[in-house]
Figure 1: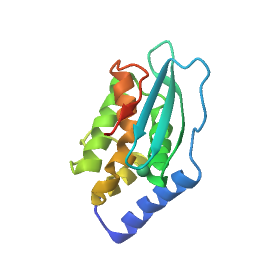
Figure 2: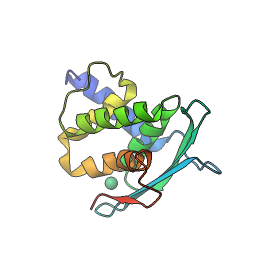
Figure 3: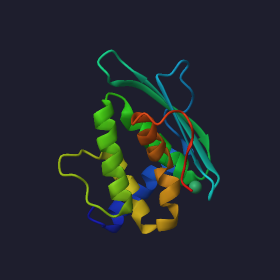
Length: 153
Ligand code: ZN
């Protein structure tokens, strides 16, 4: 991110748009993977549902949850980007986005697309737990952590 005012405004608009019109909201019946997370500090809750195809790529991703605008926008951005990725690619996406939210540079070989909007969160340290909730839930489930909810506390 260059940090220009115009670019920041554009990324703010992406976050507002995803919070007002969440993509891929809902459940998947008989999902291959379910991931849940809670952020008690803010009251955010999210549940992710993933389906994998025979090649091990994510063929469907949905989420349901309730919470602040940032937590819901982040879950929407996450699920919108998951389809077509392998587990390894999804974990790489977690690392890239979590790093960006907490102050690291994006990996050079990573095409962030709309996810770049989440870099704005680094300016609001108190909201990192809101924004990273669905991402931590994803990582926990992809690493075989089971369906118990990940908590930020
Ligand atoms: Zn929140």
